[in-house]
Image 1 (tube, rainbow, N blue to C red):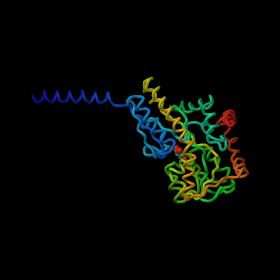
Image 2: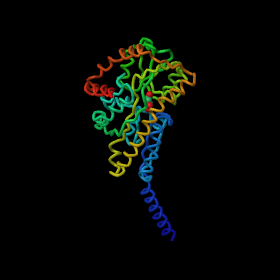
Image 3: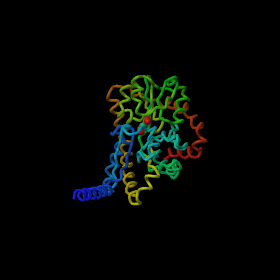
Image 4: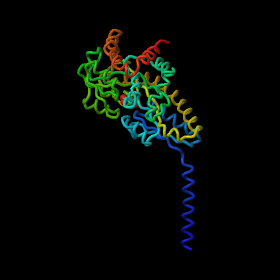
Length: 329
Ligand code: SIN
């Protein structure tokens, strides 16, 4: 009798376990490194809501902000290993996988986000989403953060002011060259380490957007910020081919539609935050915001422009030309 009851119990347990497995949602772990109240953080939350709505919770997005799960130096490897399904690293962080996305790091290439939009929506810009396809990664779309500013422990008005200073940079050879032409010392470091490096004065400065400088409190440990708008910080949302191919056609369509809507939302936030977060930093009184005169700005352009030539072969001269032409509206 006891044997019969045990067998029945085991059978019931197996059936309910199988049922639970069948009902389990497909999980997309979305890992990123910035704070939640940023263009990428808010875009990821919107994406989470939209995917739940559009797939009737068949697919669940779990968002991991602030490098909780992976730093940007590890996330692409983790994606290829199947430990994370989506991420949106800065375009500068794809340098181990492709040369062409380094285009977006060239200093003073884009005048503003309208020019960036024109290029990214062009045939050439869209084709660049496939730049890492041969590495098993699919680019699903671009997201803005915004134009970068220079912060430092001393006022930077002309390029010579940066000489000899140590700047943290993202893992990009173009960004390294950009500081080397100024005779400064660039250091590739993960985003999660920047605040401490600045606070302990292990480095003198860094480059970032208003939203990152505000949300990570860099302005509290940097007495000067030069409004240089010298470069772009944008993202590419990526997934792995392996994960994408496991979704049904219908799921892929819904997830892509959710992402496109979330990206449009995030891109608007990027524009708003560039204004709002700059104002909040100015109001804090913790740092001085330096505006460049047209003559000073021209000196920075002249000092950094030789970097374009250095990377022309890797990126492609025609691609650089096409991106530069997007400044003409
Ligand atoms: C990010 O915005 O995702 C990080 C940027 C950085 O590493 O400076």
